[in-house]
Image (cartoon, rainbow, N blue to C red; front, side, top):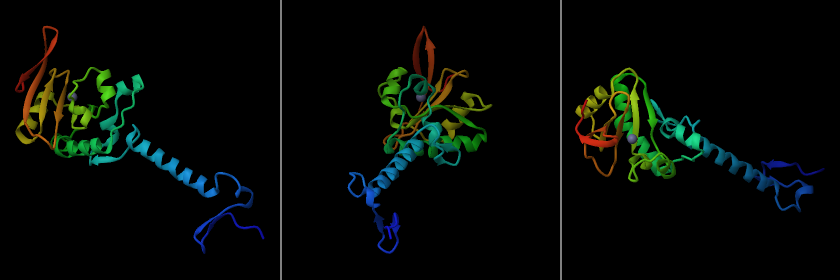
Length: 201
Ligand SMILES: [Zn+2]
């Protein structure tokens, strides 16, 4: 009687099919390879744009990593575990409280940026986006200034920037290394971007 192929539950090991015994890859190896590929695929899905891993109740890793620029330019944008942890802390301390206070969707236009993506879009070399510590967003149906003013009164953060008024967005960073609670307004003055202290309409 030929040996059964597959798991022998009594011996708890894989039985080689006779015709494969002399091949370099045993059935055990191919099974290990299949498991490895499945793990890699899951890991890609976890860090890719279809990821549905929740960082907090209303925020997924996918929306914190998604980037139209990265897609358009074919630039990889996958955070490491340290950046994912920073994104979770940012969501817990800044984005989720904003979401819960206003009760409206918070649309993230830019969260994590790989250094290559950040360079490609002309971001600051020391951008906290590259560390997973910052996000740009708007709140549906609420002015950016109103969002900033509520955050200034109620939240702790590193930097809060009212960027380019109402057609613009809110930038906020949160870091476990520093908590400056600094408010700035970004404006275009004379064709150049200027950062002024405070929230300025
Ligand atoms: Zn930003």
